[in-house]
Length: 223
Image (cartoon, rainbow, N blue to C red; front, side, top):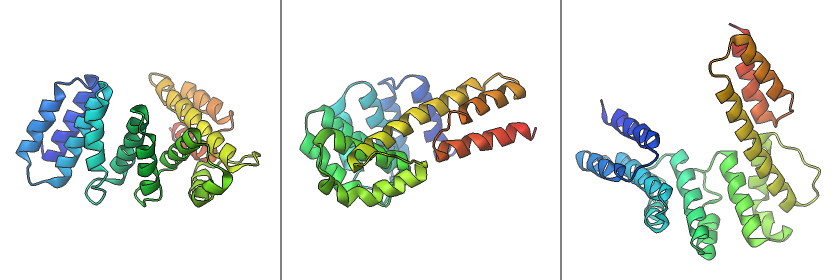
């Protein structure tokens, strides 16, 4: 296996073993083999932090996350999104809200944060923990408008604060439901899969998830 395949294989092995602490040493060993590959080094660090996090070692995980968040020019945008959210969540869990707010304000506008679900989650965190006024939320309105457009979200809520919470809740629930659809397709006949997908579409999900489901439906109906 090449180095990319090695880290991907170890990552999947870690997940399959429920982030067992023994995998910390395995990622450290992988780092020692590819000392000149900065991106691989950072990916190993991220996986080590995730292992610590999943085993309740929040401080140890946070120390790594806070170092990684400085390396946005090396790590992938997707990993940067994960690191930012975990940094905020861990600081919050440890009672360090002001530190979490600093991470939020420093990174919420970062070009690396491209996925609407990450932006909605961060904005909802800010609303839930600081109860900002509409005036305080105005600097983030453009971010929210882009996120809700990507989601395909419409609301009758008059206040921006309520819209943010509603949109975030909607995307979380719909993402979970769509994930369940994909799980329920396993082992089913094509006709059964078509009915499952149609049932989801009939719930009138936001446009982003509707289009994903319609693509699945088209693939099944084209067989």
